[in-house]
Image 1 (cartoon, rainbow, N blue to C red):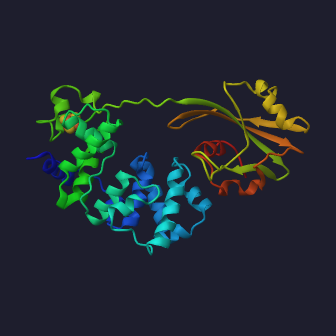
Image 2 (cartoon, rainbow, N blue to C red; image 1 turned 60 degrees about the vertical axis):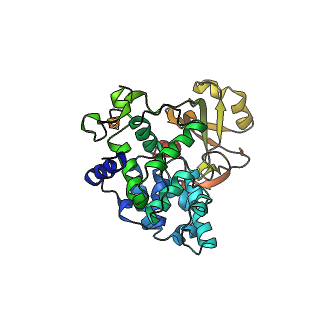
Image 3 (cartoon, protein in one colour; image 1 turned 180 degrees about the horizontal axis):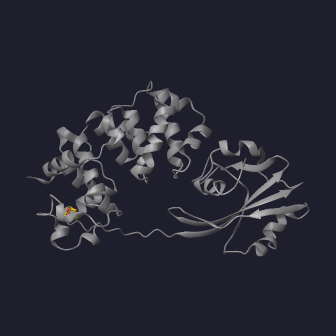
Length: 347
Ligand code: SF4
């Protein structure tokens, strides 16, 4: 039996019962694929169900405010996914009469949709013969066929795409694509794969050469930058300074003004710093509390953050506005800020 046939047969016996597997609606499939990028199934499923409940049709998503979409996305991270989702919903409603195009190249041109997502949507919804290549697929192919070319190199990307397309069962693309991804997710896992019960064991190169742990190979190591942030929750009466981010990964989310230092600083050092003086130099200010340190890890950054509750008259911050404290919980914020909110009484 060939690799592809074995894969599909394994899938029929082992697949998980996931809500997006019960539909061929391209809107639902697109939504699930965007939510599941960089996100575990257990974490993404409640978001998928909540989005479909709030926005049953693509028109509902297109007509929602950006604040609403970001608020619903809160906690999932990688917020550009939510902004692109919203943009593309409007694009499809305005330029495609609310229908997902049944054309791979047109799907690929939509904002926030790359090769993987275009192949997933067109194969799962329309059974078109495009092979998906994600982390799970790369791991399976590299181990079974002993491919040690770094998958993040340009040669590697091309090679894995070709290999995936070569093994695709074209007349059953939806099932084959689901099968290889599911196999990577639950059988040929990154750590501790289930080799002893694996149907590919007889011909798996990695298993035969004892190189399962070495495959797949990655060339680039991401450099992680440490950042030390002190968020200033400056209150004036019942209001608090808050601003909407205009750039970076947290674009569209609300955040407090902050001071950033190149190294870890004690509270007394922060209050004696030039940065602090510039903000509070001629105002009466009283620090009410300083939070514990929160550590928040992103793909390229490790953020060490503390939140300062301060009452200060006659202070102002360019690009931040005074917003009623009562509205704080309704606005979309980063998971970092949300984690802090969970430790205090905002009522
Ligand atoms: Fe993956 Fe192990 Fe199966 Fe090879 S034998 S495909 S490494 S689970």
